[in-house]
Structure formats: C-alpha cells, structure tokens
Amino acid sequence: MLADNMNAKIPTLFRTYRAPTNQTADCRIWEAARATTATPKLFKPISIANSGVALRYIDARHGGNNPVSQVLEEAEALFPNRPISCVISIGSGHPSTIHIPNLGFLQRVGLLSDDILRTVSAMASDCEEKHQETARRFANSPGLYFRLNVREGMQDVGSEEWKKYHYVASHTQQYMKMQETKHTIDYAVRALRGVQHAPVGIESSKELLFLLASSEN
Image 1 (cartoon, helix red, strand yellow):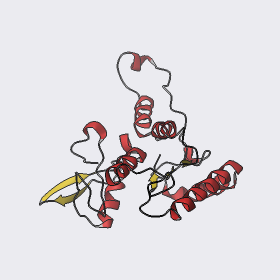
Image 2 (image 1 turned 90 degrees about the vertical axis):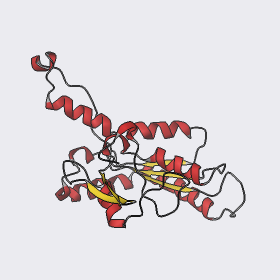
Image 3 (image 1 turned 120 degrees about the horizontal axis):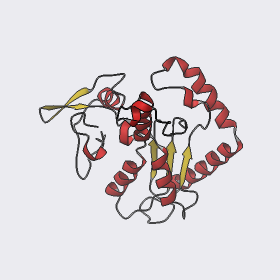
C-alpha cells in the first residue's frame, strides 16, 4: 500500500505478469516482500522506483489484511466471463474478540485510552469481515470456497514476537489434526484435482482458476 496516500484503502498489486490496467513497477522479489512486511511499528517503508519516481510502500495491514477480494477482482479482470473453480484462503489464526472497553473518566471527557486505540487498530486489521463477505458470495456454490485458519492459541502471539514460532507450529499442528479441518482439506484437494483435469479452453463450471488468498491477522 502506498505510504503517502492510503485513501480508500486501495492496495498496490505487485505482479509477475502484465495486467489490463494499473500496471505497477517491475520490482525485484525481495522488494515486493519488503513492501508487504513493512509494518510501521517494525520496519520502515521501502521506496521502489516507478518510471523514475520512487514511491514509498508499507504493508496493507490496516484495511487490506485479507486480500481475497483483490484476488477475485484480479481473476475476473484477467479471465472475464470464466467461472471460478476453487478459492483457498489461508489465515494466520483467529484474533481475540474485538470489543469496546468500559470507559473511564478521562475517556468520557474526550481523551482516548490505549485500550480504545488498540480496539480501533484491531478493527482495521481484522480479516474475518472479508472472509464472511466471501463466504456469503459463494454460499450457493458449495465446494468452491475454503477457509483454513487456526482457531485457538494464536491470540497470544503478536506479529513482532518471532521468538514464539514454536507456539505457532504447535497450534497449527493441533488445528490440522481436527476432524473438521481434515474434511475441509479433503474437499479442497478434490476441487483442485477437478481443476487440474479440466480440459483447457472449455467453458465449464469445473475449469480454469485456482486462487490462493493468504491473510494475516
């Protein structure tokens, strides 16, 4: 996302292919990775040159944490009038419940507490809203949209706490053992096999697109 203009929360898409519109700068892979991880509290923005002008980029944590909508829009722009066969969205763990804390005297007179600021930040970076929108969009197309997201334990691991990776691994392994998770993965594999065996160039409901939308809480 552009660091100097975040109006409408429109992200920048770094591509390895030509897009119909809004083609971005041809940058190196490490530059794109740096841009997507430039969380303001952890890393400085990165400047990437575009037609001789260097633009500053940060990550899209606030407002664009779940990019599934952008993935679907991009697919429709690249492959108009073609059906979507499979969408797999991978989250990084359910967040804690977002709530408004009880207001004290200072908050009632107009001074914001750290708790309220954290709540506002959590609302801006929440991924579940986009997940629910996508689930409603494909509600009448079972076996097309799949969401994998660790349910418990990740609430206590912040994005800056890289030393807690063993907690992430433990919670993820436990989530993968759950019966409903196994069912979701099995159904997703069947959907992907259908895409792989679909004849290229034939317009059908089991054809053409496999989309991966990753999200970060």
